[in-house]
Length: 137
Image (cartoon, rainbow, N blue to C red):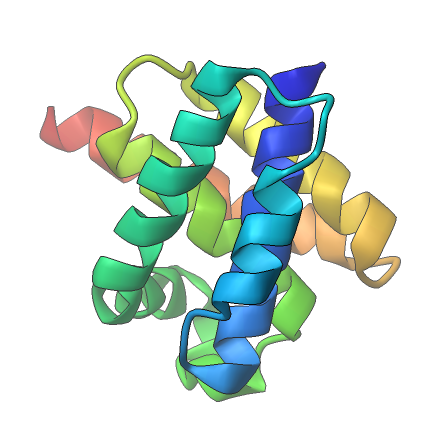
């Protein structure tokens, strides 16, 4: 359960970053201070969040290329984009997390934080990206 909390913390940090285009250290430290998070989960937050920020443009371009009519990333619902950024980063760079777990967690996050139609859209985009990553491996 704590990994889910850690992933949700990263989602919230990325969501904030989408709007501000800078790391808010106060929010970052506040979310990491959650007493329900283990030390490995805090490390996951550090690694994943910093990794997403360092590869932000690359990840956005990949998402846009699979999002059909949303080739302009600015047109995407920001809560969907945040969830997909976390998931695509995990799919590409976190070998220890099964792809189906990553995709299901992203879908669960958008069910909680986004629009009614978002879960199907996010699932479709992530499934396409994952399929191509598997084919390239």
